[in-house]
Each structure stands twice: as structure tokens, then as C-alpha cells.
Length: 237
Image (cartoon, rainbow, N blue to C red):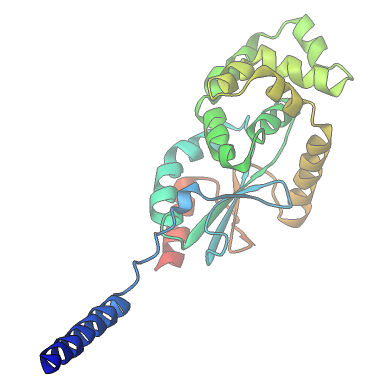
């Protein structure tokens, strides 16, 4: 009987050892694939980067919110860039504001409002609704023009935002009025954006929008998605 128990004990020990070895040998689950279209980084230069920060192919866009060509570029390129460029982890998109006038600046302050994760949806909202909020510019009253020239910075940006319906656009995105007014009063950011615009003109030779850098190189004569697309595709091969 002792020999039987001994034999069973050895069998069970061997069996347990086999189970433990099998468990130990089971491969670990693969790490979840990053959704690079949900990764947004705010840079030290007050721009926003979408995608893999270590992506080997880096696209920089200089955008003015009052620029119709920028709105066309956004509508034509956004889905294709997200699917074929950003989602792969091979490419990232950095959007830099190029402020041309007080309206541009006001919209840029609102696009920057909130955490970095909200920037690209804000950015897209303003460009895709550009014809709507720009329409009142054609019929500004003298009283409105006077408000837009107010020497008080926050009073001026609030007047522009109110007259162009920008509050309404942002409130539809879940922002409340006090938050928006704090963003419109951010004179320090406004001054930095103005300086970044000056730097872009001097260092990256930006004299119109949209303008692009690919891999840090300014793309001369490239102002549309039609012109930019083959240059990106060549680098993805």
C-alpha cells in the first residue's frame, strides 16, 4: 500500500510539474496596439502634435483659421492622413498657428482652449465651419468695428468671439462661458503665438497658408493636399 501511495505521489508531483511548466510556457498576451489618432502632445512651441511622437516621418502644418485654402486642405486631407499616415505610427502631424490678424488670433486662442486632447477637434470645428462664422465679416457695423479695436485685449477678443458666433461653436463642444472667456483673455499665449508666427516667416520661410514642413524641410510650392499627398506617399514606401 505504501508503495502504491508513493507511486501515486510521484505521479501527482510529475503531473503538477507538467501543469506548472505548461502555464509558465504560455506566451504573454500581445500589448494593445496604440491608437495613435488619440495621442495628442502639446509642444514647447505652443503647437499640437497628433500621433506617435517618435514617428519617423513628421509633417508640420502652418494654418491660419481665416484662410479658405486651409479649410479646403482640412476637408480633403484629414481622413486620409489619419488612416494612412498617423494610424500606422509611421507619421505624426504637428499643427502650428500662423496668425495673420485679430480674428485669426481670437480663433487660435479658442482652438487652444482646454487640454491638448481637445485641440484637434476644436481645430477641425473652426475650419469646417469657416464659411459660417466668417460670414458676418461682410456686414460689420461701425459699432462692431469699434469694439474690435478696443485697446483692452480681452474685451477685444470677447467682442470678436461674440460677433462671429464663436462662443456658440465652442459651447456646442461642451465648453462653458467662463472657461472660454479665460482662454480669450490669455494675452501671454497670444503674444507667444504672434512670436511663433514671426519665427515661422523668418526661419521656415512661411509667407502664406497652408504651408508645410516634411521631415523638417520646408516644402516650396506645396499648398494643397493634391501637391502634398505624393510627397508623403514617397516617404511611406
